[in-house]
Length: 577
Image (tube, rainbow, N blue to C red; front, top):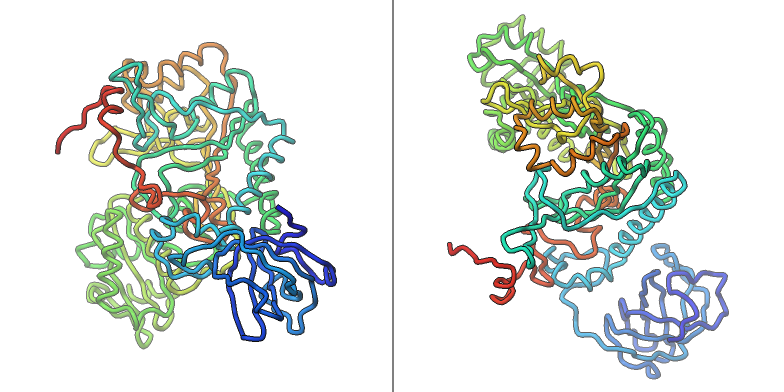
């Protein structure tokens, strides 16, 4: 079908030219003597004008049309449109296809509920903001391919149907028709296969990989997602992070024209936790956590007695407006992280006030005010716990909550850093001497901590690293164990028997007998990276056809029932509730 130009690309240089355009009617304004039509295609919008509306067929919003006319300069430019300095004077308009009234307005700003947008996703995708997001995603992928190809990486696909492996979330399982009673699992990541590629001598692998996890959803999580998955042999942690930093810098420059300052900062895991209450800290604002145990342990308040950790955060200027209702709300949030609750003090007329101030003498109050550098109307939130992570994560969540409420996060800014030196193991609460892997059981312990494996495994740190952007974990990885003896020692610390290892990882571990190179890798969450770079906080905005928060596709109604014949074919019978 004839088209001379894309609508969003017309400029003053085109004035006087005859053009033929195609697209959807975005808006129509009939003034009687003049008819204005905004014509939209994937490149943008241009205004059409008919000086004799009687010669133009009746059109409505979302009609598909072909327009013939001449470009001229506008008398009054529209600064809100890239094409705002020109318009097309119509000679002829042809209706290609009519459209019914859409269930919501096709525009950047819409008040449609998200499930309505997802039900009619093909209409939602016509919105210019959605097209811009998906085009940015495509540009990010092109940039990744270009960079990694130039760095001698080889793109390799790994299997989608595989044996289930324990990776921290529930698997989606697929029944086998040929082998009744047996199941494949969809990959949570290509972890084991990419390590086998290193044993296979590929040295540098990458893949834009589909991954699947059957877990509860939220704004930045989907049951199926995409990773930029990479693995490298014969490189240490500094070398891997250096390559990844240059990749990120190129992505930011190509997509949002932002110059990432290199090298990126590195923050140790426990420094991030103790200061920001998160292993993915957003350092664009303050409200940092303060250790006040040395001070508050001197009080006579029974709630602090015997507590291993006592910390506080100062919220400037929020003393007077923080009501009991607000504190109830904060306590609900704190309990999600294992805290019994939070308490507060306020600065009123230069003095501390609050429910437990009676347990602090005047000298102790002055010591606390000096240590926290408190000012008039400051709010101080306190928490205590026997567990370090509980108090850090709990206060960290409140820190983020207040930062958003107070508008402390400046839009259009980027905060990139590495979090490194993660713990190797996570102690299981209530089960002394029992541990789970902080990342996965193939993570390599730091060389200087190997001596602690037999005596203090909880103090062992790993060659593990996460890339944090604006408080989101945008990717993470580790160096991998390549020494057979160390690998088996890790399995034993995790409580895995020889039979457990053989059943879960036998086919993988066998490969390590034949000369495994030192190797490590990382995976970026492509969806989350796109979310950050397009300025949205909803991962569904950067996927063409996502699921909703109930893991349902409102458009196709997936997941759906299948016929009894299909169930019989794979030998499955549903359990009656």
